[in-house]
Length: 84
Length: 228
Picture (tube, each protein chain N blue to C red):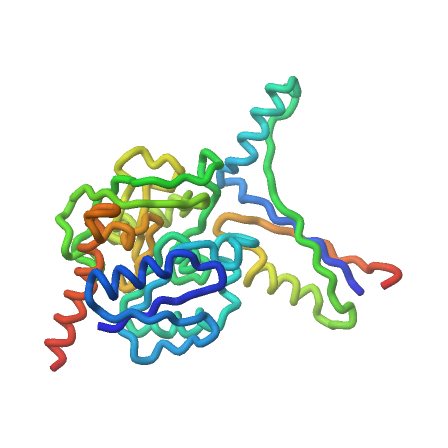
């Protein structure tokens, strides 16, 4: 079993309304040191590790469905999971 | 004229669309469940609003895995009209049939009500029955109504007359360039966030949505007369 974490964030050029609301809340709470907040999502995939071109296939999944490149950027990490 | 209404799990406004076409316009609309995917014999496809697949991942994104989307792409390539409203617009954008993507509303809340729109292009299949610059009132209901395209795309849409409707009362949800409705390059696919099928009878939401449907019917009968 191979575990893949896909991190999806809004592109830098896109205003993140949730991030804007959250930074305002943090600053109101006294955390004045916070200069920027961007909210994204983590997608965890568990994949059959015997597939040969796993990297290429994960990239394809991101481009075709998991990520909308008009508004989002992504990166992913591929790692083994023990005990499964 | 025969309309197909594409229905996905979670579509919510398919019945409104059906009512508008069958009862109000006196034409024929049929529901097409997304796995049937056969659009042969239809003259236009309507993609209703709602929350297909629960809006999971991104609104409209999961509809791409449905067979209907392949059939829809083939249908759109023939030049016949395709109209997506609300979630239907989001599905068209996710499927790549229209440019852009959707963000959460600027104010982070689901909003609904009526909005004023300006009609910018009256040459299109969908808008010939409106006056240029006409202000119309159309209901809306969305949480991801914040339409986004980059500046370059927005300028291109504008210069090619593909922005059909803009918000005329403040654009509270933050859409790029006040865009409320856009056409594809060939002009036969329209996506819009407001819901014209809810404005076809005076007694419920006004009738400012009627000219949109009448424009489609008119263009169709013109084409079919000229072919005969």
